[in-house]
Image: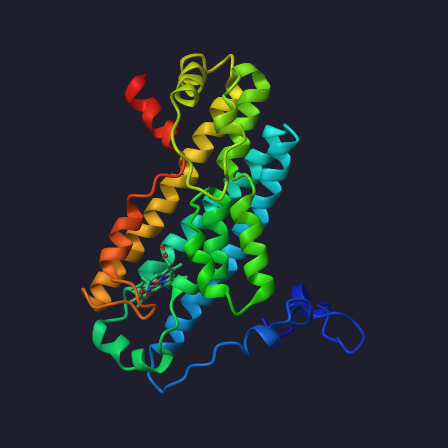
Length: 276
Ligand code: HEM
């Protein structure tokens, strides 16, 4: 094995060329896990959050491109990106399996070190929610001290969401949706509308005629389905870890997260199932 020709010619001199670690900035990346205590499990807690934030970064990247494509009426390539969002969401949801190896006693060893820090202040999570259409101006507040981030989030809050763009596409493909839907105040949560339901119903009743819209609709349902799974797993993990204590971010904790589970992003796509 030691003199195997398979790897004898591998590149080993990186004095003048880009290496793996250099390309991926691994020195930087691996210097960013900085536990505040000696508690063994704090490393896991940091890594899981950072990995989730990296996936959110990818999700935002894909969502923005998918939304741009939908604006241009190009459903097919947008579906490829939305499929990637769905797969990344699965990775984020699987992360709970690793985190659940931590017990409440392990968690309490370092809990006091991070004070009021909480996922509630996750800029990227709010961006994902805003892009998907879960709009709530209150969620801008934790970013009041960061002008750039605040401005980016506010812009997303006021722009059409993934669902709004899908409805515009429905309209452009001949379903003629009302102005109250197409030109609504995007900073407000989306309200379901009977004419939107009627349009989706037509799509679902004649799938081969409206195949691209039908496929897009099912992809949106996949995204929402996976978002719900992430929320549910987070909620259960939180209850396992801290019971009904308040969250480090100052919310009611489990009570707050339970309400969030009732959020519906694409209401007519769920209603249509009852009507079919
Ligand atoms: C021991 C593990 C965890 C506990 C006990 C926990 C606890 C909580 C609690 C109580 C909240 C509600 C806000 C607050 O008052 O703090 C929250 C929100 C949040 N957490 Fe966690 N969390 C944990 C792990 C994670 C992980 C690994 C992530 C991944 C990024 C995460 C992301 C979030 C996000 C994005 C929110 C905002 C949810 C929303 O506003 O709907 N959490 N967490």
